[in-house]
Length: 187
View 1: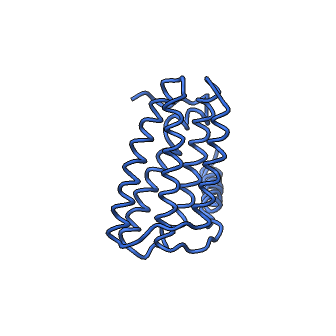
View 2: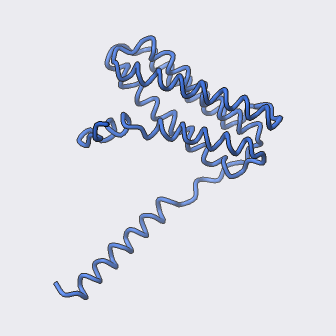
View 3: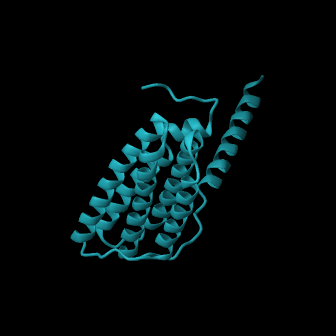
């Protein structure tokens, strides 16, 4: 191949990559701005939803991976709830309900009802699917709120919450479940 053809192919690959990146970073659908109180309410609702599912999994999951995941989730979301309470108190913000927190509560209730009907390996698989769905929904919602916070305390809370929800929606278990032919390297 001549240098010109290679350069042209590189330019074409770069253009395709830039187009894909532009599509991937399109702005999210606009949402109503939440108050700081409503933002704290969303974080607390999402954390409570994760805690409820983790409590159920800790008690009913037959698989070691699901039980360990549930224990980690309980620990992380208990800490996040405590941090949310502390930061809200420092910001003098009382958490309040919003359509966003109500939507997360409905999703969590639907997922819990579904989990309660299952047993054995089917429960474990559904629990991991439910965790990915809930954490992705919460992460997406919190990402949209992060830039609108008025209080530095609430901005800090949203950043911390986002890191927890992102980590659980993108952890090794979810990666392996989403791409069963690609296994993450062992630690």
